[in-house]
Image 1 (cartoon, rainbow, N blue to C red):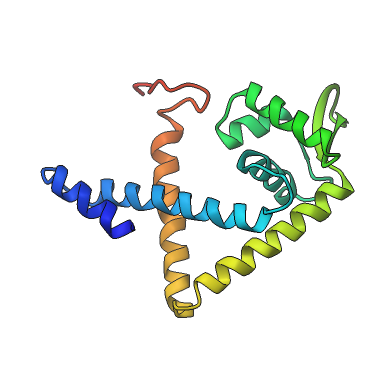
Image 2: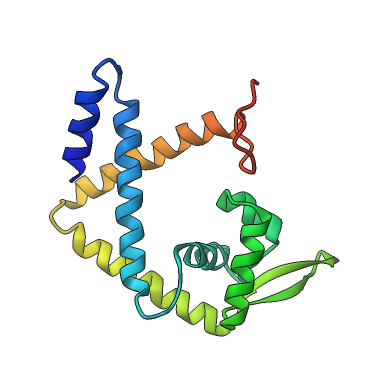
Length: 175
């Protein structure tokens, strides 16, 4: 399917030079495929992609597994309304809770509950297992090269977009 998508773009837009657009197309396709791994791992849990990503964001910061909503929407590149909506859904499932910010008692933080922590740990393990199985045809050296290349690509894209795009707006700044 991926090669079909790339060949369609090559046929329709042969004047595009360089590999940037193809790399972007591959990343978009990989994002779709990776989301399918998360959905498969989360099957039966009643979680949506946005909820999974928010739980991941809380889990990977380490104890006490809490972040301010502002940090979450900046990190996830969504609106504050989307974070509020997702947090409320997860609160309804007792996977997160609101707690006072220890550095500013006037502010609230979103924290994983013990049930949320257990669920996301299981989900991470299941997703990692599925991905490791899918990547078995690749040698360890190939996997390492891909990981290093993707990390470098992320650095380049972040350096380019961080100063040009407000994550809460679709407008590009001329800086």
